[in-house]
Image (tube, rainbow over all chains, first blue to last red; front, top):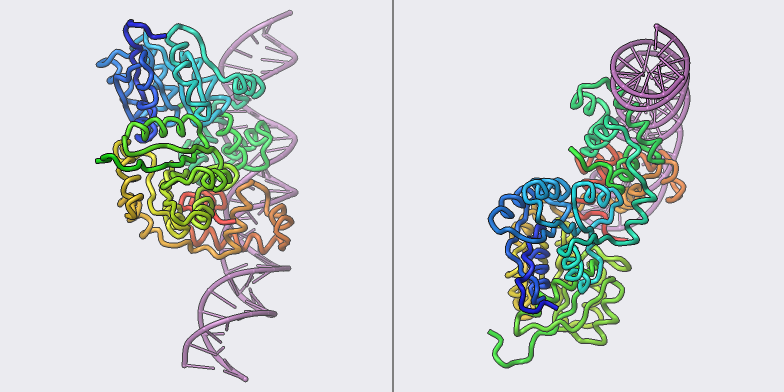
Length: 210
Length: 210
DNA sequence: CTCCGACCATGACATTTGTCAGGCAGCCGG
DNA sequence: CCGGCTGCCTGACAAATGTCATGGTCGGAG
């Protein structure tokens, strides 16, 4: 399969060192793959990529510094020839959508069989797109976020657990306005209360952006 | 290090197939270690262990079927000679305490360096205990759960997101009583409201039991 | 036995939260 | 220009949530 040609150069980004190292070990077993860089933070992806010039970058979504989606966009801008394969724990529908919009070539969840990962890397490197079909269906079903910008912002701030008055102060709004945005979000998500709405929105990946 | 003696037999349990496979690849690089079984659910640990007789079991905490703590206890009861090393994503203070109480010999979080994992396995196999020192300190600081049995039960049920009336019906209590338990929990956790209290309790691993 | 403390349970009360109708600004198609 | 639409903001009202004082039960210490 690999012949004698140059191996595919990989960059790994995952905040859990153990997983990162384990993935490196797994992928290094393949003759046609070589891991040239590992980082543990999203904001280290581009600087490291500039040094090591990988062909494919495997990025986790949940990372400190910069999330995997933002890192994808930054990397695509800095090194357009480098393909991105997003490898994540949670198959949140919105994650897939955002990742593809940011320029990722593939999206794989961490409970896919280990043997398929190397193939996914090869396909991405060959210019193909790789997505979990089940997840793709869910993404289409869930659709794009129904939340308006303000609603999203309020929900995101509300994750901290503060009261409506706290949110109002943080966002420079009236307390009533905050409650109204929350109410709208509750209605749109089909939730029963504030906490529930936050859960639903998070599960669908609607709280990602800035 | 390994010489010519029999290698240490390992069982791996993690719900994320990719991580499981990657860990297997990582550990298989060591001459004195051999992975004899892999499972993706907590309730498969004991049956599989009865077949393959591992020397050390690496268990994740978050697993479907049976959580890693319960699996630890079950495995210790079924095969007392098999040591358990818990490998988890979250360094929740309560997790460590519960794991050790359940009979685990070691506790490692997934952002420890990959190279240390094999050593941890060897130490556990040799009868030593392995714990992340930072986490051990946090555990002592956080102390044992201050929540009473009922409070814990109410909080756990409240995770679903239902209203106080729903909880009252589910637990066969008066609505006022439910609110009172919640209020007590809020006070003890230092939280500002119900949702916040749930977060704090979860972070500390106080919501594990049945 | 009696007291004491811990836990559980309950209803009354104040605060917070969720809902609603309505006002304001921008934007688009006619 | 105008009506219709969407999103943002606000205050008033009803419903939920959180707090408190109180009483009941059980088990251990004195």
